[in-house]
Image (cartoon, rainbow, N blue to C red):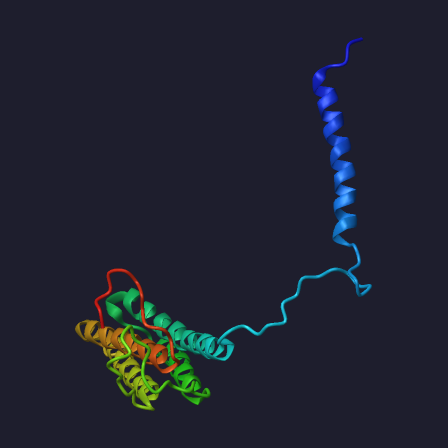
Length: 192
């Protein structure tokens, strides 16, 4: 009986895999000169870790405000004639106002002396309370939207929703500028 070449190749490949697999594992677990397991560990700190952590936390805080506010906006805009029941409006409004209060109570990030920009030749001083002012404006815009969404007048909902969207954008911008984020670098954006 003649042995097919496919079987020879498959048998050789299986044997090679078993031998190399065992050898690879043994080499990976070889002890280093100190008697332990060989590891490659960098003990150098991450450059600018504090600033990056502050920026990351600011973005996380921003999410706590955006989610309930957009839930309120979505509910109003999807409702018939933009009208919500008093109970639903209260529930969504309380969630949004609670998030705004939580964001204001959170420890503010240390704002840089000047906002990050592409050109360091024109420094602009940021107001220290820029973020809190924008959170207050968002709270007022939410109140106007809640009033419009329970008034029975559909024509008031559009302008009120527009004010909430504008306030959300302003809160986002104030948070980003106040936490030392780098200047935008998206292609196509106008130069600042």
